[in-house]
Structure formats: structure tokens, C-alpha cells
Image 1: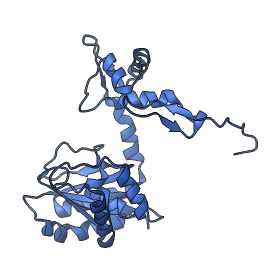
Image 2: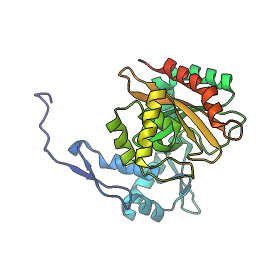
Image 3: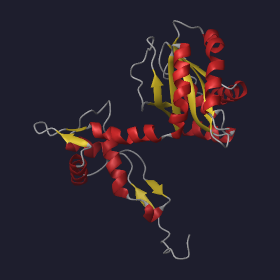
Image 4: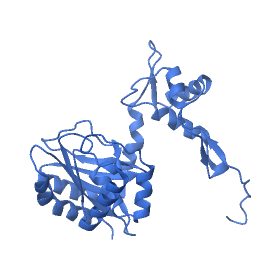
Length: 277
């Protein structure tokens, strides 16, 4: 801290969680702007399960009282991020909420570096090619080139999936120190999405070690039935994972051994070309 900066009190601000959660302790204390956190909490309440919400539902989903929910929905409506139906009085997100995602995609150096290699991989394989990044215990799809054989149209840019049961997630975890990778596993909500999901802790440790040894990770029908994926990690200048490249195909068209034989070298080469090490 600069000698000219005022000394801040050593206080900790309680951040209200979504309803049902425990209060989080804000280690930055007075620097935390709770109104900003609440505004994003309101926006995050909307999604596939809640495409529209009335005021009472917004309050329930965010853990706010009606007065606070009214103030935040009014402000976000005035700013253009929410639309309120004049007849039903229900709120929904507007296209303006895409702005932050657009600015991220256009400003991301990783996406910019990866784009020519993803396009090349898409043309060479004629299969679905994805660029993903990790956020805590999840992966986020930040670029996606679809093939005519695509199975899961529900997966779009911005889709989140658990890292532990996806090939990109395991690929990225495999390049972390093992204790750090297992801390991510321990923080995850481990469960079986399909009969093929690897979700037990020690089995995941072994899968991470195997991915580290071979340079790529695979997932067969672990989230969606009929879906196969193979991925390799993209490394930053410190050798830490900053993303992953993966190819997704249909299990009805490729066996497990064929997925590895056909695509492992390609995803490793693409990831290495994008990496900064």
C-alpha cells in the first residue's frame, strides 16, 4: 500500500448468497460493492429454467426482499438489460446482456490466437471442434465449430459443464499440480450424469494422472449419451492450463479406440500451437 493511501479498516463484508446458500465472506472488505453483486445476481436468476420471472420470483431466486428486487429490476430495465412485459409484468433478459460476452470474445487473446487453428481442425476433421476455458469447477464453451453430425444442439457458446466429467476439464486439470487439481474435484458436486460417468474421487485422480501422462483426455457418454470427446490442454507462458481444444463426435460413428487413433495427435498439435510455452 502506498504511504499516501488512506489506511482502510480491517473489516469483512458479508455478501448475500443466492437463497439457500451460506453467506460468503468478502476478504476485500470495504472494496466490495454489494449493489453490483446484487445486480449480477438478478441477471443470473434468468436462464433456461427461468426465461421470464415476476417480481416475487426474482426476489425468491436472489434472496432479496421485494423492495430490493423492485429497485434492481427497475434499474436494469432502465439500463436496457431487462424487459418488462406491460401486460404480464414479467421480466426477461434482453439482447443487450450479450454485450459482455461479445466484448470478451472480441478482446480475448486466447480466442484470437486459437481461431485459425480451430478453423483448420474443423476443416480437417469435419467434426465439432470446441475451445473451452475453466471457471472454478466448471468449463465454459467460448468458441464452437459445429459439424453436420452434431448431436447436442443444446451446447452453445457460454454453456457450462462440470470439469470432472468432460474431456476438456480433465485435460486442463491434468496440467495443474495434483493437490490443486484434487481441490477442484473436492469442490465439485460429484454425481453420475449417465451410467458411464466417472465421478468417484480416486477414479478421477487416476483419470487426471492418465491424461497428464498421455497429453490428452477422453470422455465417452459421461454427460450425454452417444457423445464422445477428446481434448488437449492449452498452456500459458508459465505452463499452466488456460484452455483446452476438443473434438466431439458420435459414439455411433466412432469406437473408443478409433477416437484416440484418429484425433489424439490432431488435438495435441492444435493445443500446442495455441499454447504460449
